[in-house]
Image 1 (cartoon, helix red, strand yellow):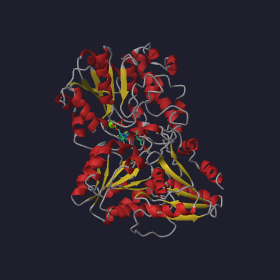
Image 2: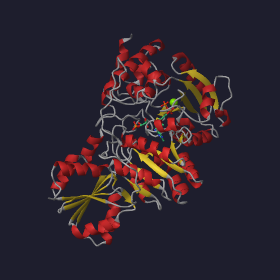
Image 3: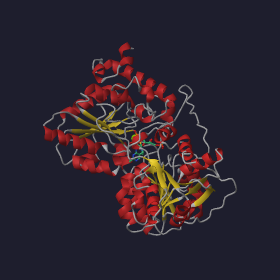
Length: 580
Ligand SMILES: Cc1ncc(C[n+]2csc(CCOP(=O)(O)OP(=O)(O)O)c2C)c(N)n1
Ligand SMILES: CC(=O)[C@@H](O)[C@H](O)COP(=O)(O)O
Ligand SMILES: [Mg+2]
């Protein structure tokens, strides 16, 4: 093996290699990614699958002058290794370390930040158009997966691109899977595409450059040469294997999408022993509800495993529907279901529901349709970082008429809220974090919960803390651990909208210090709503809101980020003590 290979940290060094050395470089990157990710978890399968493609792209094209965008960006690890981040790759996704996604701040080679899928074609068309206007001549390339290209945004961008003569190359990286097995009508079309076949891309007005083996350097480099010689917009279909080169990952691609810690030799994935999570409770409750009421339909936009709906799907294949990466469609599809006497539970990560904001307003709330939104990964999510945190949802839903917003802090309330939602004749959002949950101690029976009612947890006399969601549980633990029951009055708000106005008014009469706690951005959130009520009551005491600031929060563990932001246990205890 050419020794220089281990040191390659920049495309200029890469371009000095002989083409015959490239397979060795691929082997080296594969081992490096496996070694690192086994101890510093991240998105493994997608990155292993594009190693040859990444090397070939940086070998052939003149990056960063030529512009290269990675859709979603979870497959960008080989790109990071070849573009200056080999030496700090072991800081991936950790506090103060490099991001798990392309980031313009991090490198000139990351020409567009990604994380949410299906943005790459729009962005590259924008860049190519700008270059045309500015008289800049260079190449424009977007790499996008088979699941991401079926999303609405991608199809809108292809439709636009096909009407131009922009010299853009779209590389369809087809490994026939998303996180979970791909769904939808186009899947079959992509899998049948060969060199000689007419493709849907030609109907969009694009040149189709055929199918190449994405693990073969000769094929890839020849295809790039052909792309250079083909004027106008074009699509190259590249077939790859997710998890390529690591047998375990090739054989169980769902598990190895982002496996967590693992032993590289044995392939054993370390189970982080965790107590019961919101996701566990959600999965088991949905199974109960699907069993109890045949009108209930669960919907997921391509996150069936992440949303813990696999078991529900096995039991109710027709009533648990994966619509693909299509959040906007998922919401309006749910609206249609709700309009015709079924009860949709539209299950979407908080961060991805952002994409369907108009659908929530225009198709659901405006018509007051009883769609249940099950909003997973609310709050901050940890190592996925800024693109994936879910701390905007309280604010973005708070401003929409008709929508109920719930944020339960324990298993019993969470189950009862999900149960109650089916009987409610208006949109109902239940948000919950990727965290462990306070569990029920006694046997449980589903009961309708009173919408909008807050609950007194402790009745101390010095300070009133009004909390919602997971933070309510955290504060309860702080009070117990520090025996603060006589000093701290803790009120849990399972509902942010409608708010328990009556209760807040009573507290305003009794306490000189009131503070709110929420795992959401402060602007327009729970605290803001409480403040409005306090102002109406002419409250003259001191009031403090605790939540996330008006800024984008980076990556790290959830606890590290909460420490930085003053929402970990220690900071909250200090806050309480400062008033005692
Ligand atoms: C808007 C949006 N919805 C959902 C996701 C979650 N997600 C991340 S990767 C992925 C699958 C992508 O599949 P594909 O494009 O085929 O790429 P591959 O992982 O196969 O390389 C999904 C659904 C996301 N990042 N963005
Ligand atoms: C890249 C991407 O968007 C997903 O893979 C995301 O990282 C999933 O998050 P969870 O691991 O919390 O399901
Ligand atoms: Mg794929």
